[in-house]
Length: 165
Image (cartoon, rainbow, N blue to C red):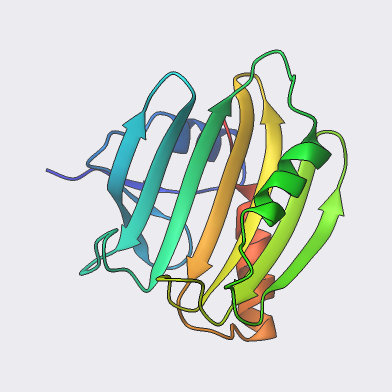
């Protein structure tokens, strides 16, 4: 049995997403997204959401929620953003990287490429923010490259509002 939860940009939405069960389906945009992968260890907790008919091993669109445990705030935001950018090797064709906004408590960035090593072309819009447990990352990714500017704006608005804890 699946539990259907709708995201709302308010306290009830934050509670619904933060307490969802693994079998939950949530409405991150106008479509239902289901948990395709969920794992945690002593360093992080990651949950990936896929559309019906897709799996994390073969997706066209993906939402990711990742908590990197750092309750003391030891990892500076700018350092994490730099490390993320450095993770793209020289084999990434046509890498476009843009930090849209950054402060000590939040970074919003966007990247796309035409293929990296064995990875197909992708576009990702991410929000990284401080939370009580560490750094929280919400990301929307698409293999439909390039994303239209209106799609970038749409998913940027969504990841900016998603709750972390």
